[in-house]
Amino acid sequence: MSRRRPATLLARLLVLASSALLLTSVPATGTATAGPAQTHAVPLSELSVGSEQVAFGLQRPIALTGLPDGRMLIAEKNGTVRAYHPDTGLAAEPVLDLTARIDTSDNERGLLGITPAPNFARTGMLYVAYTSLPAGALTLARLPLAAPERLQVLLTQEHAEYGNHNGGQVAFGRDGYLYWSTGDGGHANDPFKAGQDLSTLLGKIVRIDVSRACGAKPYCVPATNPFVRTPGARPEIWLYGLRNPWRFSIDPVDNSLWIGDVGQGLVEEINHIRTWQGGSNLGWSCKEGTPVFDQEQCRPGVRYVDPVFEYEHFLTESCSVIGGVVYRGSRTPEARGTYIASDYCAPRVYAVRPQRGGGYETATIGTFPTQPTAIAADAQGELYVLSDYPGWLSRVRFERL
Image: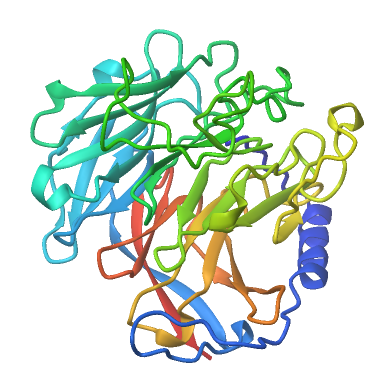
């Protein structure tokens, strides 16, 4: 994440004013459903979000995932993984230590993402993303939680020049494929023009089949990936035109991707990509959100997919969008189908929900604890949020106003 924290009174007034204009709720025209109850969602203006701290003492926690047994695994930037269970709390010792493999030389390098295999209950297999020693290469690997010495590197992307913009989210879709996000190479202004370049994995979300090997590769490229027959393109690419998709999630109901892409300095954006939109160009660095950023990177006749929601970064306290998840739990059925996200420097909770008639309902519905880095669901679909330097884990709760 690229981070900036202006603190002037003028900036505070501007962010409040811009948020009031941008985040006015649109009345819902349909319902969001999940599970057999088919409960009607209420307008976002009738929801609020709060949180309850359930663990502390974590060391720069930056990634979070739920396990089938009810535990939450928490990745710490230095390469350790801690386990939390609501009945027993935070385990005293790490369940995994990868520090010997990980380059933590920059604020944004480290262990970045973690997710269990779909068959984790049987195999104990985890998938991790990190910046590897000696030069910070973006690395996707898998390992049995009980036997970390059997770690297998699946895919790498060189990333030596700059320490920022590493992406790092990993997640499985309902299609069984593994998705992984990468940043554009770092620094600022897309120095390698990677966002629009299909010959590199930088600035992309990739999709691979890790259930089998193809030739010398320990994975296969799905035949339905959009660029498998495009000369010069990396066939692993699913989406392109991204700057730093630090956190994305996959809705378990419809397999759509919700992506929080960190902005350059003008806006922060959230993208919603449906299953039929593989190959979409999200614009960077022709565009930053909806505004044009670099006209030289824009191409005639190219269709860019705009974000479904964006908020102002320039002259505000906001600095890095923290992509979240769609709520699919049962504790608050009125909130089902609602996507929530936040910002590292200004931790307001942004809620976004597709409307059946088209478009999106949006609102600001609360605040998170300071410096949120990741939002994730447990095995029951209930949400948790991490806080970076305080080292907190908090349980998220929805309330109806």
